Length: 312
Length: 304
Image (cartoon, rainbow over all chains, first blue to last red; front, side, top):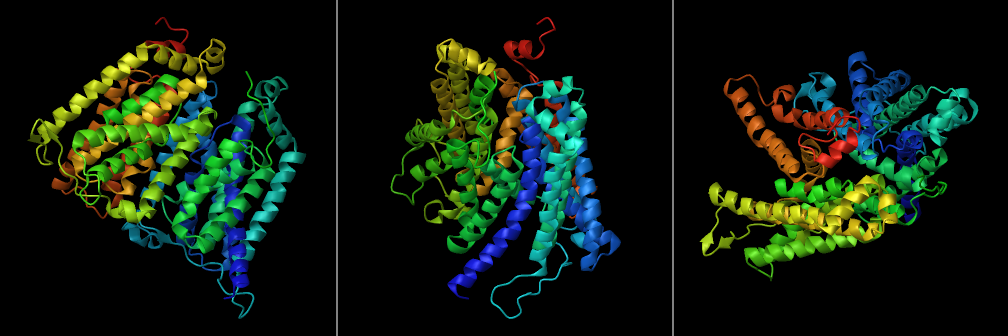
């Protein structure tokens, strides 16, 4: 492989992973934008999405590429519903309290979800290795083929890469349309801007926040299906890593900003791919966290975020 | 455990800063203690001087991390400490020339006091040694809390803007809290390492340890030393007494087999901790043993 081919290959890998990170980051950024909560449990929701997908694969005996549609229909529903439920049970009661209370609660939710994933891995099904060694990574069957579309070229472009792009891109366009053009999206932006004023205008704030959680959760669900199909391995603690990447992406792009989350996601995707290739895989995580801290210290509003002053 | 909780209490309890990286400071403490005492390094200090130096190292690291980041808002700062925790873990793992990677640094010599050597297998002397440290720290923290600095911290927790208007130098005070908290956590790390006779491996200082620290403070009651001690007792007791005994009881009666994930109580542990955090936030945010001030703040309508 020549230098250019290596570069091009990492670009493709970075793009695909970046789009997945961006999808998760969108969930973070939407929730933060509306209630200023760093939803710690978002990464673990993503994990549960992956486990849900693998369970469906096992239960329905899915084997071929078209069955991806089934996963994409059910898993986002599951994740969206779960995220709504979490908000209803854990966060809604804490809207009036100090800022740290919901954050601590979110950490608690994160631990609960992560351990549900651990126990889920112990379900005696074929796809989970009959439930033995619950904590071990699980193989996700190759539903979308891994063949190289470029024939004999050293650079690999697989149907998987195309699948990632063809799912994530339209979804992002649809989300932008939803937030910008629909009535519900308008209500969402209003609540994000000023909750009290929105309430006075007759917006049911709790319902709008619940919707935001459902949509963010559904995006995580899509991300988990795409991730599982792309990487073919899932693990009960994977949400922590994925969540931190996505959160870094959201902060980098400017938390609260939808295009920012996508830009940040792609940036982190590329940065990870190039660090893996040109520096060393074992330093990649250090680099991501270093980016996170540096952005927070020097440009807390992110690349695309607006500066806003602390309200008193 | 209790010392870790106390270190965290300075931060969260007194100033309202959430530190999600206490495990990292503990790791800093454990590793610097190990490097200072272990015979494969040139220092080979005794227990007391090494512990003293470790506290200084913890203080310095806390200052260095705190200086640029302390002006961030609460939730952002929490994330920075979390990121720092992850970086420390990976750095310890990757710099295997110095830290021996995942093996950890060992063996470490046993500490001595007045000619008496502590050994790993006798628990009682260790217990009194740690109790002594704990008592010292409780005294120190109590005095801090009642000093000018302590009052400034509480003012910052209640209302940062108002505090700064009253002439409290909020940045300086938060930084002091951050560094002192870090120093106490690294002391906890040093003691832990001396007890184990090993620095432990980097994986011992992961995010879950930090969360245990948060649990201790939240369960016990923020801003209250007695509360934190109780929290440490509850969490550590649950961890090493209730869970252990339950596991061996179930094993003895053949109710569980280690191949079935659902029946191993240890697998439910973090779920319980998570639930505890959620429920505490929902129903009793001031903790089991709240300080009077915090309670009055959270329940304004009840007579104190």
